[in-house]
Amino acid sequence: MYYDPIKRSLGNVFNRSPWLRRLFYNLLDLLLLRTWHVHRELRQWARGRTREPLAILDAGAGYGQYSYWLSGLSRAWRILAVDVKEEQVADSNRFFQAIGRPQVQFEVQDLVLYQQPNAFDLALAVDVMEHILEDVEVFRNIHASLKDGGMLLISTPSDQGGSDVHADSETSFIEEHVRDGYNIHEIQQKLRTAGFERIEARYSYGEPGQVSWRLSMKYPILMLGK
Image 1 (cartoon, rainbow, N blue to C red):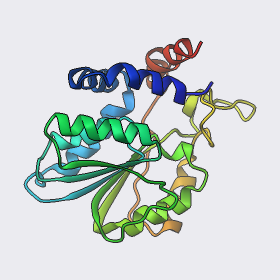
Image 2 (image 1 turned 30 degrees about the vertical axis):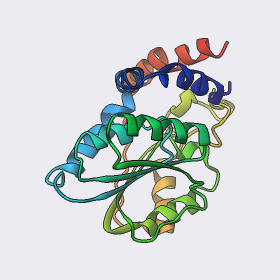
Image 3 (image 1 turned 90 degrees about the vertical axis):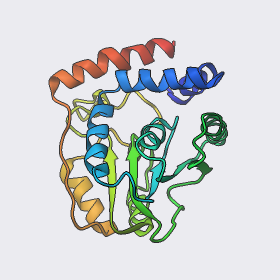
């Protein structure tokens, strides 16, 4: 099943007004279990930093829900959100201007090529790396774009049932995925190859989380795709 047409249809509905877009973000926060884990890590990173003029890269921002959430923590932070989809970038720039958050800017960029040396204090890539074949090149670009002491936060499917794949003969139900999920040692090694030194990786979902994901995301998406 191709996910992009569904995302485009959802965008057409929720981009009609700023309050609908905010509602959409709240629904995503409610339905996506990964959001809880991502927000927890970001809160830890943000502790004691909300008054600092920091630069953040939202790599593969999609709808921009994480840029929205981060921009609500501090107006001192400058957030650059990049994505390959021109329509989403244009919609997002209009939304953030409309709600009075000009410190958030969206640009059309390809993460395989994009690099801004020593520019960012934080980068996040949530549900991005499963879509990009040249993952090590992206990691290298992000590493080069981070300042000394900067952090990259990644959330991506794993080989422990990620994308609801449980056997070698199975594949992700989302056609745009170039990989079903990372082995924890594989992603650690790729990050080391890209230049990262202090690496922490862990599996976030157990069986209850997988059941929740199927009920709240997989099956509704499959129904929308019919």
